[in-house]
Length: 291
Image (cartoon, rainbow, N blue to C red):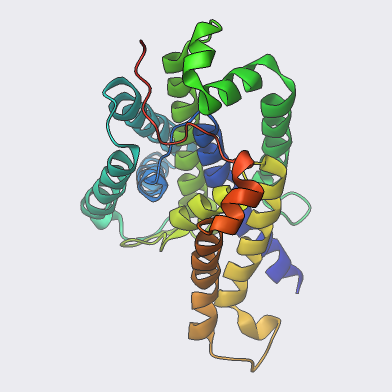
């Protein structure tokens, strides 16, 4: 039973890192629906780097670097060029889906390195993830930097008049969001499931995206949602450990995605917009043109 709990917490942290990066991105008004593509790049290039150099550190650094680069590029197309943020994000996802399949194909198979040691039976990323959530909540809620980020996401015109550089702030958040997405992918391929295969993430990025809306852009609620989805994912892999004989494992496999669709449907309703609409950054997805 402990193994199930530990694996659930490990899965939860992958969702946490990716979703937290997207939350920071969205708080500044930038929507990146291509988080799955960012995770694929981070997971694949991080896997290749670690296997080639036999260094986990380089693997994670490469994952973070490629994620940051993709986040910066998303910022360039969305912020500087004023492109449609959804289209740009989908382009990143499609690019990641295709290019990582080509690049990673020669490395198909297990990582072949000694596993990263745990701390008290839990992944070191569990403790890092918890700390990062608390720090993100504090920065966004209690600091001047967080106020600038939230201001840019709510009303960039007023923020600009107040002396806040909207472009720099959005670039910063887009890059940080990409770095966390790339790190999330690297954690998946180097620790959680160290075996590279074609499209091995299987929609984790889209679940992370839904978690941001589920959390109402609050890092603490996001952590709770990540724990829920991490448990559901692990349950879908090993339902016999908790609910033996209840439904087929293939039905359990659909549960995280069914709940994701349910969450997206709920947040799309008029009731949700009226009741919780104030939580959503007002300028989310809207390009800003300095007058």
